[in-house]
Length: 573
Image (cartoon, rainbow, N blue to C red):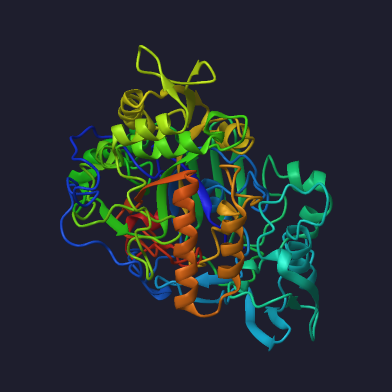
């Protein structure tokens, strides 16, 4: 299952941005990153940096110590609370992924699990996926047709009580049945679906057994696994997860002996742990981290960089009863946020290339084929324009300059995760700017593990900043924008956008599909629910001996090949 995932804006390995107060210029006057510290040109979308080494050049053994910025809320990645980058990063070493991607975004069967995947009929559109022989879940049950069927049956949305992430794509399946053997699934669609490989996955019978087991049975840990690693220990008190080689793993033996994940919410603490040799890799996307570690790069540490399909944004809750239920207020908000200043506030000292463009598209990144700026000025910072939008939309202004509607000053609540230095950095900038437009911004800080499950997903917020982590699939974000999409955290859409999504999902001509995506994005600028801030680069600082790990971009991590080069003292740790 390949879907866009959300990431907390925090301060550690799964974060998107960081802290550094800096000056700025008016948005629209040049590149968004005109004041960034980097040099050279923007990184291409098909380039990554993971220190690739063949398996025979890796040592046998060693412990890789990694960090996340919040503890796992639900180990079921098919559940709406499990669609979180921290969770998926850990689970990737424990759970089958049938399809893999290289740095170019080219897709192929993961040879550890999948023998073949192919289109067997154009009319009706039918595909087959054949699993490898002899694979079993950790509970002894076979990984076979039924495991694939579980995914499609539950993700279709037709099974009551299952709190699924989304039915996007699965709702186009008219029939799933066994193929020529018990390891093959034959899947028939109602129409052509170009991104069909992104739907392929497996789910153990134990997880699919009931809505209760699916929704809450895996809160304390995954009960069934089938990856190169297994869970050695989960320590909730110390917020650590230890993964160990699984002796029953049916694939290639992993290079590492174990992987230790630690949840650290404070950016300074994560840096201290790395400097002390307690972490081996850290996404240093926070200036408070990067500036401390910069002196180590090229000596005791290596910097890995990539510009994948990840982006940071401000999402507005458009529910009718909330302040941003009014489109006029949303559109005014878009003009009242100084996006370039926000970027520089958190990234001025980061090694972003100086020629990186302002991100003005939600569906395609600046370095991707087909990218267009569809904003038409609707995200350009202009306080007077914001005030005019409000005045023309029926708002008045009181003696204090506050926008008033129905006799009440306009107030919106910004909810963010505790420990996020990035949010703490931009809040004064956004607050002050909105105040000039007459909008009062209140602030609510919440525990990181509660941000999505208790606030964003239920709709208990007005505005929040986080990151979407993309995939090679052009349809992977459809559920974010569709009116009833499982990932639509703005809780609003339009029939026009839904129609464009339907069209792009089944369009096989790539140029026409890209044009439909841009038409969708243009409509999203008018709807004004998600304000793109910048494409988020990965800056991974790690031990120089660590191979096949780092800034992945589009590439899928292969946990059998992650390890230390031969002769490294880390291999004995």
